[in-house]
Length: 337
Image 1 (cartoon, helix red, strand yellow):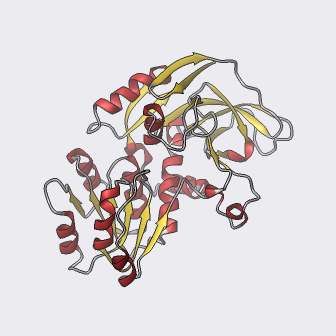
Image 2 (image 1 turned 120 degrees about the vertical axis):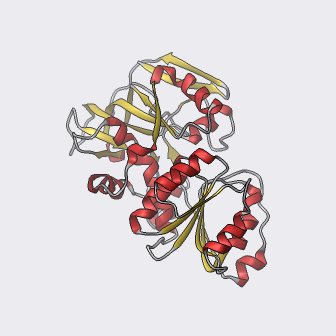
């Protein structure tokens, strides 16, 4: 079978490897569609601090079951499924309180172990979620990025009565916007790419701000009547932005952090304490696949609006180079198998 293989940073090739077999409790998945995530780009460029090499990348993927391993129940060959890439030990403190997404022995397909940019993948049946046969494989592959939005909105207790500032209008910012608008939440979006801000407006953002052209803090002050914004979700992760987030947050406000950097951020304790701010990290998803699948089924979000380009998976390198060279034109790129 063919796989997208990264031996080390900046070294990507389409490699022939033996097809795996489904072990006990596993299924053999014939991958049909996969999304390229920013973290895949970071693994390729050597800037993802969590990745291990060599690696078959890809954690946003879907397909159909080709074979069942011993003891697998509830699935049949031919079932159309999407994949939760999070694996956990089930024994540590985080797992014991239901937060398997931050397990102390966490592994993610495509990051810590081989992932879904391959024609076939053997993986635990417990990581699969069936989707309707009427869904396209592309739609099924888009469940995973929406679970990122579901997780951070749950962590920050986003409500329809909130005003929400989303930092970044890339793919994750856009799925957060769609998921928040589902609740009726009023949203503002900040990004330095005009095309992305236009898309955010079409998706229902009340306010869009390009901080290269307009003071974001002044715009948020005007939008909130000088009260500050109750909820901020940062999908950018630029260390220099954090003090501004603290200033823009309202008293008793919440800040959700998705983007990350190894570099330290200035932290103004006075702002956090005097406003009694709550700051939440959000990583991956905590059993959010059933919830997001129901959003898709009920038409509460429009995942297809995320997709801007499609490539055959054997052109994965060309797809990544295209993303790198055309950041303003690209949202979600789908690899077709």
